[in-house]
Image 1 (cartoon, rainbow, N blue to C red):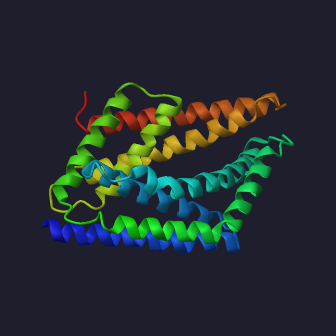
Image 2 (image 1 turned 135 degrees about the vertical axis):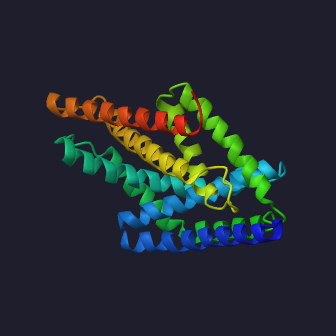
Image 3 (image 1 turned 60 degrees about the horizontal axis):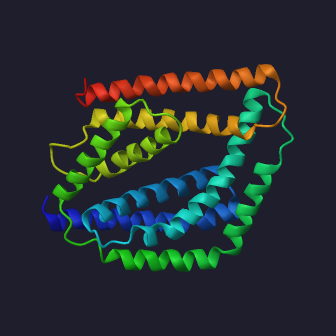
Length: 257
């Protein structure tokens, strides 16, 4: 596809992300459904991937200014998500902590999203309008270059057997590969369909591990039954084994020995 055709597709994708974000934010605040919160966060991640691409192509593109308001909403929604995850894990592992810290953080985050809704919306629309101008004359080859660079960074990280924060950072790059590879046109893909499938499995396992690890860390300085704590540790080890399994499968598919 020529550069004009690719630019049109990218603009449509960008427009759709913004449309979904501006629809899902008030929808979640009105109905407070977990699935709407999840979809909102996914849309923010997809938009973030586009802006990382633009920053790669245009050195003058202000990535920090573009993500400032999105990051604020993402972090606030993350505090709500942490509480929802904790409730699910408390039930799964039979943990009764009496810890209201996450609950209070989630309530505070919800109040901030509600009270600042008009401001959030106005600022988000300003970012959308400003960044539309950067979505011109972008070529498929530029996307392919970014995908190749990001792919190599992921491979380097995975070969080093990352842990903790580095593993979580790796997941962010994997998600970018997954989201942006969907925009690639032509028969020969930088990221094959099989690679995309493995990337999806790998990032999902890392996400599951990260949620359990975060829950475990939230239990510090609290009394937890020994059996419950052992179950949490066992689940964390199981998920890490799955992460290693899919990481090795991806490296093998990517041609890394």
